[in-house]
Each structure stands twice: as C-alpha cells, then as structure tokens.
Image (cartoon, rainbow, N blue to C red; front, side):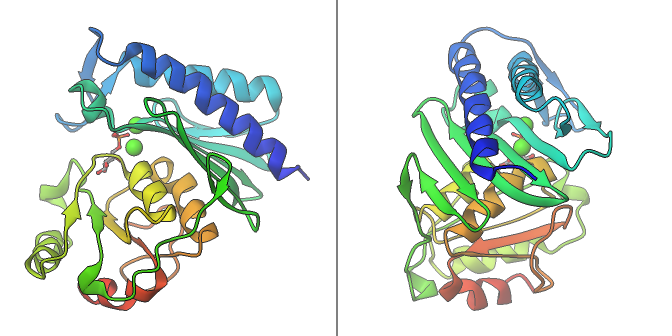
Length: 259
Ligand code: IPD
Ligand code: CA
Ligand code: CA
C-alpha cells in the first residue's frame, strides 16, 4: 500500500526536473528524428526528459515498473507502475511552438491513483489524486459549468497515422465545426485534458491516443467532475482507441456527433 500524496509529490518533483530540462532545451539546436510515421518526431530532449524522470522515480521507489513512451515497458510485476510521456507536444517543441507538457501517472494494482501534467514554460502544474480532487498549482479545479453545447469551447487532435484510421474522424470534426462551436487543436493531448479539467475547455475528443498521452489527464478530468468515455459509450479505459472527456452537461450532444 502506498500513500498517494507521496506518490503525487514524487511525480510532481520528477515532472519539474524534466520541465527544467525541456525549458533549457526549447529553442536551441537539437537532434530531431522521425519515428515509424514520418511526422511523428522525437528529439534528444524527449529522451533526456524521460531518463531524468525514470532516474528520479527509481531513486524514490526502486520497485517501480514503467510504461514510458521512448523506452517502453519494464515489467517486474510490481504493484506500482508509472506511465510517462516525457514530452507531450513534441512536434510543437521541435518547431518552436510553446505548447507542450510532461505527463506522469502512477498506477497501483492497475488503477491510476495520481497524475501530474506540467507545462514547463508557464510552470503550470495540474495534479489529481484518486478520490482526492484535482488541482491547478495548489488550487482545486472543476470542469466548466457550460450547459448549452452550442456555447461550448472544444479541443481535439489527430493521430499521425490518421489516413489509415478506420473511424469517420473527418465527419466528426466537420459536424462540430459546422455547428459554429469554436474548436482548437493544440498538439498536446495531455494539455487538452488538463485544460478540460480546469474548465478552460468544455470538452475534448480524439482517436488513436496511447496510454502515456492520457493516463494522468483522465484522472484529472474525472477528479474535476468530468466524464471520460469512449465513442462506444463506455467509461474510457487505457488502451481504448477513442476518447471523449468533457463536462457532463455537454456529453450527450458531443457523443452523438461521434456516431
Ligand atoms: C501527441 C500529442 C498530440 C496528439 C498525438 C500524440 P507526442 O503526442 O498528444 O496532441 O494528437 O496523437 O501522439 O507525440 O507529442 O508525445
Ligand atoms: Ca504524447
Ligand atoms: Ca511524447
């Protein structure tokens, strides 16, 4: 059994260590490579950030397992597993766009128990503990209280392999844009979820995300009073191919547009 606040403190410290690395690297000349999709980039700072996070968490909890974007899965059947995106928004970072974050979640016995999303340039931290609420820096946050879908403000994203994706993603997007609802595409799913938890956005939808993109963010949205579902209408679980995260009052109308 772990003290979840201690896990969160360790995750936040790791995110701040990584954030300093990213802050110092942002805007410098660095190595950029393509992954399996040519526009899915990785920089030397994704790797440096991930190494620093794992080193710190291992120093605090040596028994930890990890699921981290750049180094993959380490599995020793520990009850404690950290799910890490060391730099969410790599394409932004690589192009000098200041929208990116570090995302770290802790799972205990396969349940997400705390999550941290840290925006290094603004030094904004979004944190949540299972059954303990969600916070912006140290202030409690709630999802927005918009009631009318037509007055909502939404955010989405598109996976790098979207052309091969089976879902009717183009129609979903168009149906919302046609309704006149303002939609943003920030390029960081972690920030999309953190901002939804904080009520800055009213809702978010996307397909094809990976566990490290969303593990911290889904806990944040839920602890802030939001819903996190898949397009089939079930509660979202890690590994699902579609996600809708929003303030409850607009869920019905948002989800109908994904069918
Ligand atoms: C990406 C971002 C983006 C989302 C992509 C993700 P990365 O993560 O979260 O918003 O649309 O699907 O892969 O590659 O910057 O860590
Ligand atoms: Ca990511
Ligand atoms: Ca990443």
